[in-house]
Figure 1 (cartoon, rainbow, N blue to C red):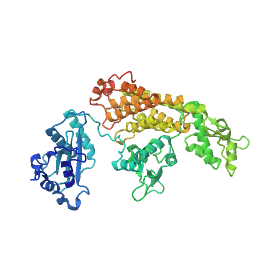
Figure 2 (cartoon, one colour; figure 1 turned 90 degrees about the vertical axis):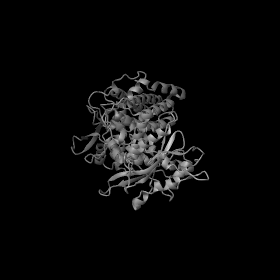
Figure 3 (cartoon, rainbow, N blue to C red; figure 1 turned 135 degrees about the vertical axis):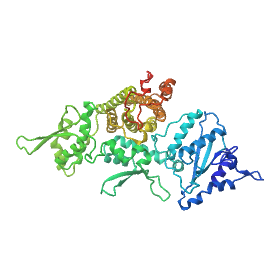
Figure 4 (spheres, one colour; figure 1 turned 60 degrees about the vertical axis):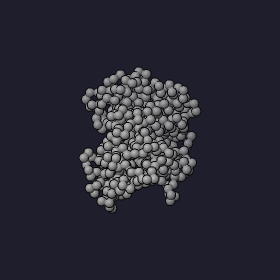
Length: 584
């Protein structure tokens, strides 16, 4: 405490402190202000004693770090507040956190020091005068609420509520460590991008962990202490990010972002149920005929490469969620002579025999390879044809267009019913950034991460638009790197720009300003990838909401549920308003 108070009254590291003085505290500022000594310096002994005295009552029950320090700063364009207004802000902060309730004489002891026009420092001792230890758990969210109250009261810049949609912030020590070793990004940011990209292209945990290891990421699985062999979590690390003792610095999924924990990833893959531990079945509902045939051929080939017997081969196909039909000999009913596969979720399954998918996938050829001890793999047919790769990207374009139309329809009917599509759009952006290597797409995917997450870490209800976008992401993983200058990529980027513009309007109607701003920024970065900076600036002007929209978005929504789920009753006020035709 003594060192912090002396720093606040000192000149600062760059002579930025001017006229330091107390504007509020547990007593009147005049009683707490340090007196001047004969040499012109402040005498802090009386203030030090008042602030640290309650620590003696707690003794061993003290916090390891008993000093609570909060800096409250106004935006550059905000008006300059006077001491009385800053004192009111400080009292509101202490009251909202529960550290100092009105009329509580035994509350914690604190002061608010102002040494600049635009901010104050609030300092408190985490020990009450009655010998109790105050609770500060999750105080950041209560501080956020107090900030919004003060912004409205004094006409300051309006900021977003603490809805827990942001990823875990990289700490200052991590940034400085990356600069010392010559890395452009901190390890936490690098790992978040790798994990989010691996999740987008995976259907199971096995695929997820394999994709991370293929990128050179260290993976450590956490096993249950009750059930032998059950994985309950994971942690990742960058190989060259070491601690002081030379060990890798591990980050759990929850330390990267709220939606990257293993239980939430399993819900995304559809593998959280113990009754159905396998992956969500392959879907043929959202793909073209050419794409469906290529996906079936790839799935059958992988099963043939892994299987050792015919029975195991057919079982692997069923585990992938495919419909499998066996054909037996008319002469010998026990002799298996062929097979056919189809997607399970189509109205009328379209069956493909192995020979129709590829000559090397006919059952006799597969059995011949199984009997061969060397198991020579016929890799000639592993690559997709140019037409099939084009079909994959065409399906991704259609999925983005369909999701855009669904979100726009929800603008007028149910603004809270498109959360799954917003969440799944992140997968398409992540995979598109990976397969193209475009730096603008990488930036857009990183920026969009906050837009995708529902508030408070909730998992949205599945939707057809979300399923289509996730399937599109996996198709792009199978398609691999597109040809340089491919028109398919440009068309996909243009569809994604329209999708992000629709999501921007949706977040505005939901009154989620931070997410709306991130969506707008990601849309601008996408437009830079497609057209260049000049055209991107024009696009930014087009997607800016009108003053009318911003004004109406600030109205409270009486029909929106508190948890962010689907609205009940009439459509929200903002959703019944006209939206700019330039965007829609």
